[in-house]
Image (cartoon, rainbow, N blue to C red; front, side, top):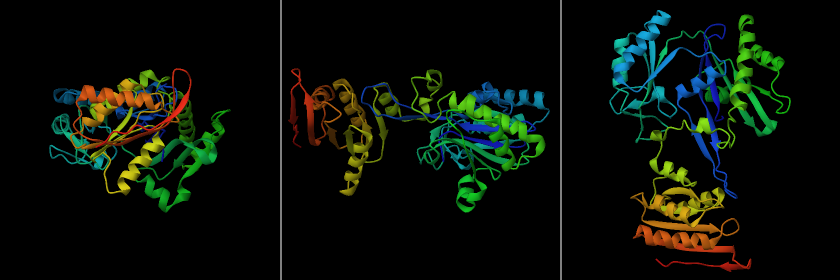
Length: 395
């Protein structure tokens, strides 16, 4: 539904169980560039942000060490007098609870009834890869676990704040039928999903927050606390951290939390070079400028029976050095056996691309063909003259 989704479990009159996948989007400050990168934070990082915002979350501990898991569980027992804890794998993927580890453990969210059991479960998580519907068979490594006090949910609610074009601004979305299957609820019973638009200028009001809480079915003793939580989520999370917006330059502390061990190393290198790269499973490397043209190029490759090896958008302000780095990224994939370069000269100087191609050939000792390189468009020369150029390299 939206990238900044927060789920709410249990009665807000008691300790509130909140978990969030706070996703922001980033675009480098390069003139003419239209790059967009999404940021996913680990669950425990999101909980820390919620705590700072004054929102209740369960007591929890975080560790990367198997030997410390038992102590984490014992510390929670000392505070709660409840030996039951939940051990949660900190892996950036949805569907963790239904996934499985390469160690053979089923599920990335496990209820444990003693510190000893928690330690045993963590041993089967840490250092192993969790495979879910979102990770593919490659899975993602689990380097951290979160040990959480167990809360007994009486009811489960759904709450989110989204940017909705039909309302021309932010919208609160709530439902009394919360849980992992909220998408099915929306499809089978749309009336169970309540939407409350927020005026982006005047901001969220207490009246609409109270009304939403009442419509979601909170009892009289919980409505005020639910409304307070909605307002804090909007003001102290959604607005403060520019959720869903292109704001990496404004949110340096948040983006510094990015866990690159959960992502393709090539994407980390692309980020350092201000390139937008996503690795795919094909054999034809793509170097394109503009996200729309990049998608169209991939579609054309598919249409003619090929398989693109990557999405790579060099944007509109790339340098010859960035172009060379783009070739380095593409050729780091052993499955790539050819490269297609498709550049629109209206937003990118074709001579810069040509210089980058020459440099890549010299530095990388390219052995694979650069197929049908065609640079057509306008480039600006030193004397501010404009010419159309076509630059082709044979197979």
